[in-house]
Image (cartoon, rainbow, N blue to C red; front, top):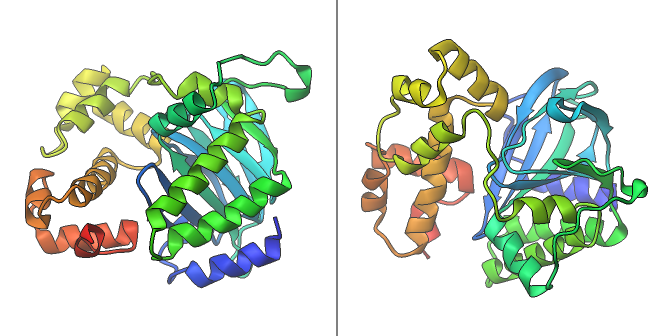
Length: 300
């Protein structure tokens, strides 16, 4: 990837800095979500997590990635990618980040259904690699970009962030290409192993309860009972695994669901109240912060 060119493209997409650590801009489509993260100060042990498979591309600066259950502690540098299994948590250090030289990374969240669809079309079968060259780690893949993947990421940033005609169709093609290239690389086994199953973790049942009751106010006592944890341990484990509070996690799920419902033709007010938002204006502000467009624009 031409790092200078990509940095210039990202600079045009950036908004005002609201958060110094992992300041996030997100662009969503039907089967994938692209986020750009800028960090402007030294920080340690910042949590990264996704409920879907996550492809990360380093743009500038340096991170140090820590994956405890794999005993993995490695530097993440420009022109490298890092593929993370669904529900797999990572803690990140930012040793070089500053206001003048932020550490910048992009992350593309890809649904498991989409991966399965592409894998089926390519008629790929799961084969766990035993090739020593790959140094295969079951839940993550950290490798150097090839030229084709680097060029693809440049195109995807433009497609996700611009409101052009046929945007969703073109994004879908680019996501298909990214999945295809990842299935041809070391990440193949990780993707095939995870695209059709739910990864279990100590909080899995609590997460499922939240997803099934999105329109209800969170009952932390109930969630603690489901997870068999005290309140303090539940909050601690949730924050460590997902990098945010249960309430923020629920809010992100509600917003993702609201986008799907709006695109299916449902009315804004109905979606707002059906998902537990009590104020349409507040809902609209949150929606625009996450997706870059208003609920009304999303319907068109």
